Length: 314
Ligand SMILES: [Fe+2]
Image: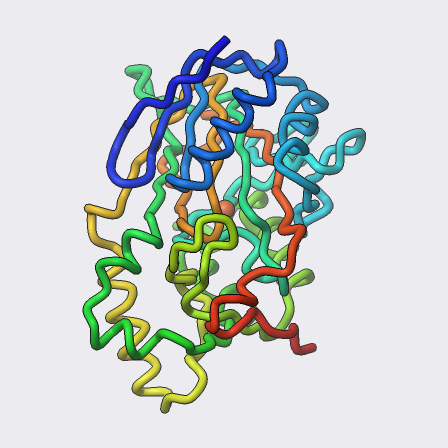
């Protein structure tokens, strides 16, 4: 078997072809996949059928794994596999239904955010005409960094942003639809929100520009609705910079929209891109994904001269 890498969409979506992960990958094929992953930030491998064990084994070839912070939806037998799903069984959600419906880098709530994530599509929702729903959008933060206007670049380089757990939960609540009759969010959404409130740290700080530990590329580090302030600026200045940064990042030339098919594996790099899960479907349209999370085994960003991720304050 030999791996082929096909350009899908600028600047970060790339499809890996000629691969059947369940049958095993040679070291050379694996290296080609990892290199594409590091270089582009998002890779897509279609037509796979992996058991949770096979997904964990493939994920471990990239290094140690993290467990997702909401342990409730980690698989009992394979706790490295986190269930992303809106499916209700026996009156209870089997996974987190509203996962990731905002622009973010995974695991920013932790001191040393994960290297990246892998999502395997088991069930994909679709509308009555068969059109797939529940896409995932990605933005290249290395392309966005490279295109920063000089004045904005100089305002964020070397700076630290303080993320707020309360601000984040309030932001997510403001984005979650409510039943017009009751004014309440769905039981599934409420469960996810309660888990977040229980698990999130009040404040955590991250560098605004990071050096990718494997490629040396500079990347903007940003998750929307979560940053309370940039240290060293007045609140007003901080808000202005964050607004300008958000507008800059959201430009279409940095964007890849992934339309899911059953059997897809999509991997994204949490340093070089952010993503957003599109919530354009609802139960009984079924979505089931298995996610694994790649850890960051080495201390990172030390050589960058850019501020490092700093401590959780409790
Ligand atoms: Fe995510």
